[in-house]
Amino acid sequence: MWRKLGAATTYGWTSPKCGVKYAAFQGLATALRSSAGGAKVARGTVTATTDHHGHHHGDVTKRDFLFIATGAVGAVGAALTAWPFIHQMNPDASVRALASIEVDLAPIAEGQEVTIKWRGNPVIIRNRTKAEIEAAKAVKMDELKDPIARSAVAKDGDPATDENRTLKDHEQFLVMMGVCTHLGCVPQGDNPAKEFAVVEGSHKVGGWFCPCHGSHYDTAGRIRKGPAPENLWVPVYAFISNTKIRIG
Ligand code: FES
Image (tube, rainbow, N blue to C red; front, side):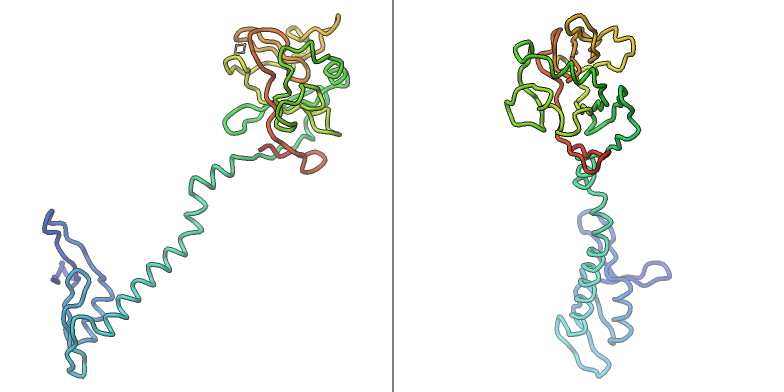
């Protein structure tokens, strides 16, 4: 059926179930009607038409085919044009964007650390002092509560040496998840007074302390005291320049 709506003529149909009116091919149908002597559109399909030579055509004419085909191409074209914009917004893209993050380490002076957010979790990046590195390297594996590296930059099950928890030639930087392996609190570090520092021999050498239940992690982020069962995890990361890392 076709109908007149207000001043504008349009074609469409009415839902027999709910009475909702659907407009169909409004502009194109008008063009068709003006050039082909009288067409009636039902549910988007021409039922009968007579062209300007007076020839009567059956249910579907060549012109109708062009009309329908043009509409279809238009719809596909619009879909293709829209895709790059939609694609940028889809969840996969945002998840991919969050999956890795680049961090410039240049502003982190020796003895300082920053905590950044990656995949919703804190990551601690510390530029360790020589004393901290030496203290970490001096620890024997049998002194460790958790002798496994827990490091995505080492192989599964590798021992928790300082080397396996840092990257070669960049050992001053310790990059690890700031999530206590006990119940997930954020361990505190970077306290100049070293009041919570792990004691190696007779020295407090730094490290991290989890205030929730009192876990102590050493200067390589390994659990040394308290209820936490595992070392702080080292995420996968790589240096992409002398001072820049990509985590993830
Ligand atoms: S959550 Fe860190 S010690 Fe319990």
